[in-house]
Image (cartoon, rainbow, N blue to C red; front, side, top):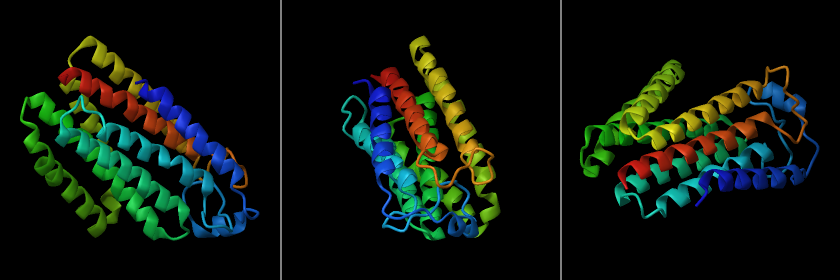
Length: 239
């Protein structure tokens, strides 16, 4: 299965749906008053930011595919697939609503996902049994989430450290030339995703709140593609 092209196609389909979802004129003034960090203006319908909410669902589709992939152990695919789908749900809730409750779920779900890939890479590198995946994941994800809830200022630095750790563990766990080429490709895609994220901020000179094309939505698609490249590198290494 060509995961990355299909993930891209699913994301683009979600964008098309988002483009068509314009029940009322965007309220850019209400958006700017909210202080939300991404660009798309709030809508008057049931989805506050339709393009961003709908492109989030690409993670749900990718997570379901991972869970159904029998070439990986059940424990591993449940952990990686569930946390990937969870990011899609969290991001959807964060962009579908106009309050900060959904944004907090979005932020926490990302930490669950990054922790899952970090621990999976660590277990593979150490050659340990998959039975350790879930308890080790809980041991990492729990403090990350607790720190954000108790001391919010630590949220971004801890996430950066966790992402760096996940990248290092992935590189160490995947030793084949083919696998590392995949990982190098995924890192390049993640780099492009970060550019889209940065350019899609509310304060960016490229921000156009009323536009139906949103760079933050492209961030969703590219980040999902990065995961779509990373996961098969792990799977092929252990098949």
